Image 1 (cartoon, one colour):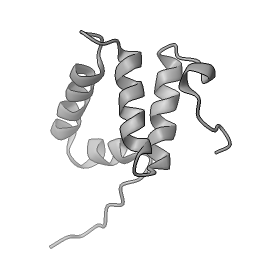
Image 2: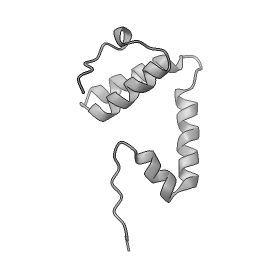
Image 3: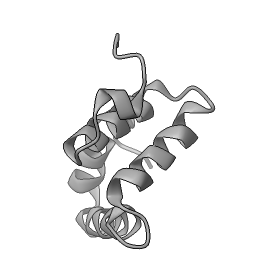
Image 4: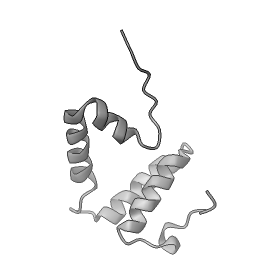
Length: 85
C-alpha cells in the first residue's frame, strides 16, 4: 500500500535520494558517465540534451540544462534561448 504520494518536479533527485539512496547513487554515476567529457565535451552533450528537451517543449528541462551548460562554460550567445523564464 502506498503511504505517500511522490510528485516528481524540479527537485526530483532530492526525492529519489530521500526514498532510495542506492538508486540516487546510480543516477548520479550515470549522469557523470553520460554527460562527462569524452569524445564530445560536456558542453556539447548538454547542448544536445537541451535540444532533445526543447523539441517537445519541456521548459523545466531546458532551463535546467541551460543553467548546467552555463556552469560548464557556455554563454547566452552560444545557447541562444529566450531567458525570460
